[in-house]
Image 1: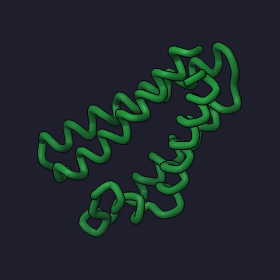
Image 2: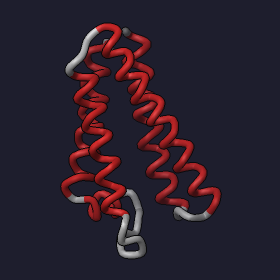
Image 3: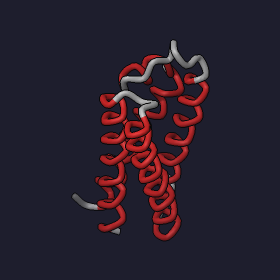
Image 4: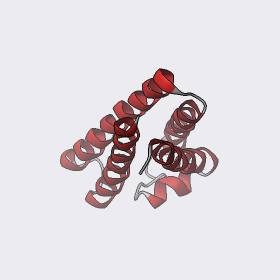
Length: 121
């Protein structure tokens, strides 16, 4: 996969997840196995996450060269932190195993796409 394709694929995933989390935070959470009813603050947190993902997508798509590399590195750092948070949440029991797996796997796929975009650049 060339860099342009990797960046576009990563941005598409970020935009889909980010817009979904902003527009329909309870549904987005449910798709990841989260229970918004048990945590009424979760839509707020989902929208924070969604805004971050949209910003990271926009930054990567609207930049080139070293600036784009910095956007991709920032996204990679966020995705690694999200992966670690998902694993920790499953291990500590404050996310069910299925939800932990879903959020961690999604973040890890973004790590892979981000690494591919950086490797090609």
